[in-house]
Length: 117
Image (cartoon, helix red, strand yellow):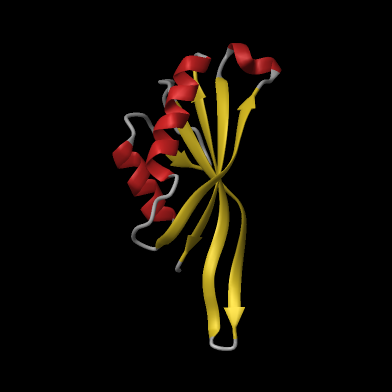
């Protein structure tokens, strides 16, 4: 799922996206993905599908740039099915307001993603 999700979003958006880090460089917007939880279904036949919460934090120099990046990701991923991903569903959106807001703005998207391993 991780590789598929990375490939899907990297090819769909015009800005850098990475797992677990903002990566190198200073260009904005950019996005970083984190798995915040994961649960695997089990049955007597063995392991079943996996459902993970994936948080995607979008960063930008301005709120307008940041919200635009988050919309690009949401438009691509919300309701997506393909490859190992059986369904991706947007479950939460949060704006990040901190003392560092002068440096970067943040919008966080949380997706529930069901997939086959």
